[in-house]
Image 1: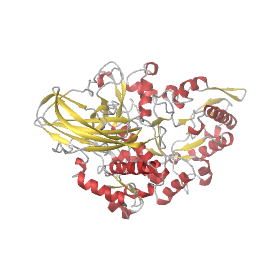
Image 2: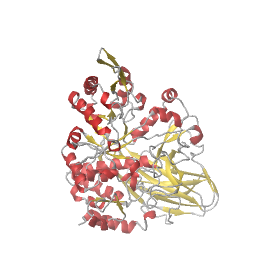
Image 3: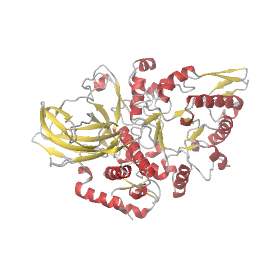
Image 4: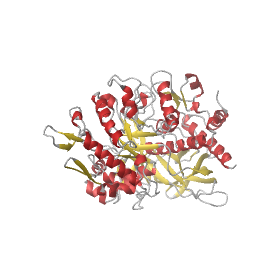
Length: 621
C-alpha cells in the first residue's frame, strides 16, 4: 500500500509536471531568448525542453543550515550579444533578505561513449561549475570556461547553477525573488522563485559520512605546479575547503599527504619503535579539530598512517607496502608496538572514534590478501582493540578464497562493499541489523558502478542527477551510513590525455568507459578561468552528493521524531518487485528483481516539502 505522502506527491506531480523535462520550473520566451528555471535534481542537457509560460513559479523548501540550489537554462532565438544572469533580492513579507547565492556557469564536456547505453548519455554532458566571480580575486572569471558575459549565436544555450546557503540566523518564512537575464545591461527576463525556509536546523556534523581521497600530488600536476608551490599558495587548502563545504571528508588531510607515513617519523632502535608525531600533528590537527575550515566543523574520518615493518632475509626492517611475496615476513612485535602507540596518541588527541585502519584494498581480487588481512588484523586487535578496521569488501557467509570466513568477519569493524556485493535481501538485512546494533558500515563508488546492464547509482557525469543523489535513500534502506571513493583529483599523465576539461575518461584499463572516475574537481587554472588566482572548480556530481547527504539528515530527523514510518520509503527503494508499479521511473540495481530504486527527479523534492511540514509540526509541541 502506498501512503498519503505518495498520493499527495502524485497530485503535486500531476498538476505541476507535463514531462520529466518540464518539472518544477518557470520559463519565459522573448524575441531574443528563451529561458526556464529548474530544481536541483535534474540535469540540463542541451536538448532540454523549455516552456513559454512566464507566470509559473518554482517553489523550493529548505531547513536552516542547509544549501538550497536551483538552475537556469537559456537558449538564444537569434544572435545576441552581452548576455549575463543574476538574481534579485530574495525577501520575506517583513523585508528580511537571504544572503545572495553563488552563481555558476555549467560547462559541458564531450562524452564519446558510456558504460550503459540505456541510462548513460553521450555528447555534451553538463558537469563543471565555474563561479561567475572568482572567490579570491572577486573578479569575473573568463578564460576558456568561465565568464559572466556571453555572446550567443542562434540556437546556442547556457546553463547556470544558483547556490543558496540558508544559514542558522535566517528567519523562517517564504522568501521570494527572481532569476534575471540581462541583454546589454537591460533586464530581459525575470523568472520568479520562492524558497520556504522551515523552522528547524540541520546539524553541523552530518550523520552520513562521505570519505573520499584527495592527494596534493595530483592537484599540483593538474595545475602544473610543484607540491611546495601548491601548499605555499594555499591551493591545496582551497581544495580541502571545497571538499569539506560539500560535507565530504578527505581520508588523509592533504597538507600532510605522504603515502608511506603521512609525515610520521618512525624509527626502529634496538628492536623498539620510536615515533615522532610532531610534524604529523602540525599538519593534521587543524583539520581534525576544525580550525582549518571556515565553518569550524572537524573532519569526520581519517586513515591511520600506513606503516608495515617487513623483515628481509638478513633480518633488516624496512617499511614496505604489503604484497603477496612479503606478507609472511611481517615483524608482528614491531607492528603491535606501532599500533599500541598510535591508538594511545589518537585517543589523547580525540581522534580515535574517527580513525580507520585501511591496509587491504579489495581482498576479493587477490586470495593472498585474506590470509594477510587475518594475520595483520589479529595483531592490530590485540594491541589497539578500539581502532576500527575497514576493508573494501562485503560480508560473505562463505568465501572460496579463505576457509574460515568467520575468522575474517570477526576482525572487520567496517564493511565497505561495492554496490553489486549487496546482492540479496539477506545481505541487505545483515547490514541493517548491524546498524541497529551500533555498527558503522559504508559502501563505495567504484569501477563496478559502471554497470552496462542495470541502473546502478554512481558518480559518473553522463548519468541523470538522481543517479548521484539517491545514495542517501538507498544507504538508509540498506543500513549504510556513508560512502567511500578512491580519489577525487585523479591524474595519470602516462596513460592518457589527462586534461579533465576535454577528456572525460579519467581511468583507462577497464572494460567499460569510466568517465569522470576518480574526479570530482576540475582545475581552475589561469587558462581555464582567467585572472591571476587559481582555484578548484566543483562539479554537478559534487553538488548532488552534498544534497544527498542533506537528504539523509531529513531521514535521520524523521526517524528520531518517530514519524519516519508515516512516509512510504518503498517508493524510493524497494526489495519487493510488486512495489515498482508505484514508481514513476524504476531502476534495477542488480541481477534479478529483488531491489529497485526510483529515478523520478521530482520525488525527492516533494518528499522534502512534506517532510519539512511534519518536522515543524512535531517541533511545535
